[in-house]
Amino acid sequence: MILERLARILPRQSQRQRIVALSSAVIVLVATIIWGGFGAATSQIKRVDVFKDRTERPKVVARTAVTYLIVGSDTREGLTKAEIKALKVGSTKVAAGKRSDTMLLVHISKSRDHATIVSIPRDTFVLVPEWTDSTGKVHPPSYSKINSTFGRGDAPLLVQTLESMTDLRINHYIEVSFLGFKEMVDALGGVEICTRRKINDPKSHLVLSAGTHRLDGITALKYVRTRYFDGMGDLGRMQRQQQFIAAMIREASSAGVLLNPVKLVKFINAALGSVTTDPGLTQDDLITLAEQLRGISTKKVRTLTVPLSNENYYAHGVTAAVLWDKKLAPQLWEKLRNDEEIFTEPKPAKAKKDGTVVPDKSSKSGKGSGAATPTPTPTDIFKSRTAEVDSCGALR
Image 1 (cartoon, rainbow, N blue to C red):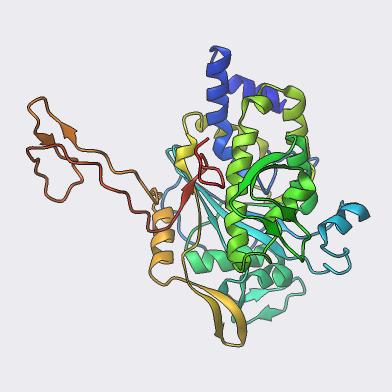
Image 2 (image 1 turned 90 degrees about the vertical axis):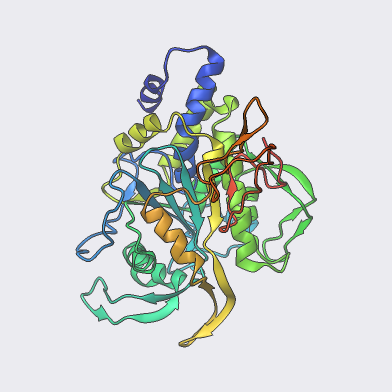
């Protein structure tokens, strides 16, 4: 059924045109489900009401824009003993009280022509708002790391805290387990990544030489979780996660997957089996979104980490936390709230036949000159990157 509906999205074109069209249609859809699965088949996917009884929420500014919170949970459920041993993550008992291993805010514009994927450090210093637990006990506001909210109040408290911190309204929630991530990668036949330097992590036991590698599910899970080899800790890990997301987008939207029904069905089924979403996210929603996203390109999918000012912050009894930049982080959330692109390439000046230059309308002077001027070097204050660039910086 899903494949039939996706097929109807595409116009009747040549095979090459169909590849391009379908790639465009799924490019952001894949980005939003990398950690969270494809569609929301009621019979297979677990539900959690993350917005229940919430009366005070950020106001809606851009009504048809969509923001997802994608969470990678560190639950070991479904993994075999051999897989748990290979991952060096400890048993299910060790992991009691699940944690949010990965947090991504994915904003898709109302025009459906650009998307932004923001990584949230799990050690982010936050003021947890007042909340009520499952027994009815009311907890007063308190300072903590954002990762702890997932263990204390599960997904609803995580969503509430993020909305309080960003004043950005979250429309949907998607959570995926270790197992779901592993099976999606394996369904694609692995994902190709490039690392600039050798990786030898004593904790995860991940060993990779510098260069290009095709990673299977278990190795990919090690790759996106490794953080003890380069001195960058969780921030380095988030950079690798962003790079892997871009690589997985390229893989899932390639002709080798889209024109291979067996591989595509395996990928979709792998995603369906291990996710939790809010009750409002339906299969129809995502198929409709795919139809709307036919024209988007990898250049318009940007990934970044929320801007930081302190990576070793101590305050209010919270130790070794990371602090968001007080100037840049609010600017980022404001852009997403207002559905603005976080970075746009400047337009080059146009030269007339007589050699004079027609300035770009956005130029400060508004005046042309007698000679052509070079295109200005773009400045990306948020240090984002596009999904078309691999982890070694090369265009694909």
